[in-house]
Image 1 (tube, rainbow, N blue to C red):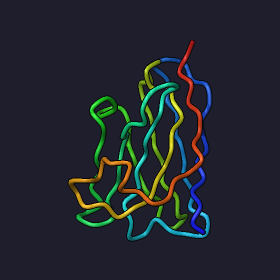
Image 2: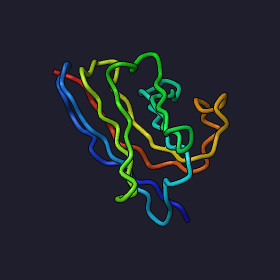
Image 3: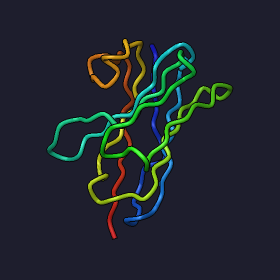
Image 4: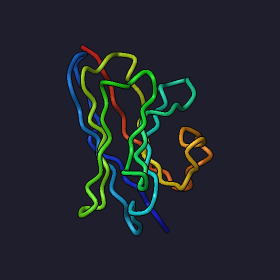
Length: 126
C-alpha cells in the first residue's frame, strides 16, 4: 500500500523557521497533486498548501500561510517539503501530507486526497 511519512516537526520559537518533509513509501508523487493540511488541537483540519503536477506544477496556499510558507518537490528523491517562515503561535498543529488527483476547484478539499501521512507535530512557542 502507499504510505506517506512526514518528518521535521518540533518546537520552534515565534518568528523562526522550520522545514517539514514528506516521503512516499511504496508510491510516488509523480503525476499527483500533493498537499499539506494541518489540524490544531481541538480544531478542524485545514488546508495549508498544494502543488499540482500539471500546469507547470503551480502552487496554492491557504490564506493564513500565504507569503510565509512554501511547498516544493524533489522528484528524484520522491519527496515533498513545506518550508515555514515567520512562524506564529497559531501555526501550532499536527501537519499532514496527502496525495491525490483533485480537479482544480477541489484542490483544497480533504476528500480529494486518497493517501495521508501520520502527521508531524509543530509547536510554535517561546
